[in-house]
Length: 389
Image (tube, rainbow, N blue to C red; front, side, top):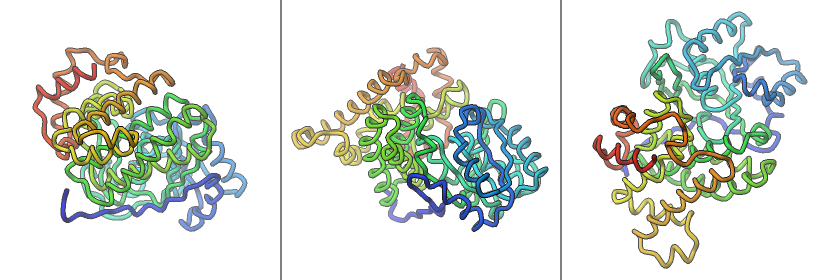
């Protein structure tokens, strides 16, 4: 753990049931006069953005909707959105959706604020100043993108990554009404995404006391409320708790980074179009098994949240960690039974065994691996892929 660290989280978070009613006041505070709504066609088709639209209509706030965003976002979507934004002379962005929508909205904010192509601003700290006002309203509880300084958008067969504190939204609104009708499959997948963010934030090389406390508390919320939501999808209190856990996880990992699970997820997601949360869910226990001897103390601390009192008291540190990993694998199995979320890599039907060498090479050059407790060899990464198969 680093002795000196910086923790940065400037996004104002409004959380609670019917938080959307605060939207007009927030727009006024941000001097918004014409709102540009970014979402995707799935949300539009399901009218999941309707609560936001109703609030804007009731308060006669002008808006325009752009929903042509593919699953991983795209540079072309950003430029198309910019044309519409400028045509309607908008001056405030509201993102309604999951990680892809949120990241695309951040990239749009670069495009409508700064001159030139997006590629000019790739990398870390390449934005010269603040961007246009923005509000993020998540419709999933997993990515934590509403409070991160990163945006990732696809460009053909690669991903463009932007990292700057100026990408962070002015406000994030957490309202369980926006996640109430989320299918169980997506609920399970995004919760495992958030759980992975927490565990890697707690155990990676960049961890710090504040990020660790946030991650620990978020795990507690996930383990308590995910089973409730899987049985009662309309439970507002537990839906809100999962949304808060996702945001807390985002605050944690954006200030500590992640690790090998994410390196593998990035390699698989970009090249084989497997959803990020699903990748994290599949790889998490296998990466923990690989890392465990380097982070025994941290995993033993986390086992407090997964084990019963008797299991914890009667086990050695090593056994507690083994039980923790086993419990995560069991959680994956339970979620597969309840939601059909695949627990094995082969069940995605996107990858073949002879792809493993390629995936391993991509994972080993991914930026997240720098923060893993130990750097694996290509052979060790392939072994992890084989265990996940």
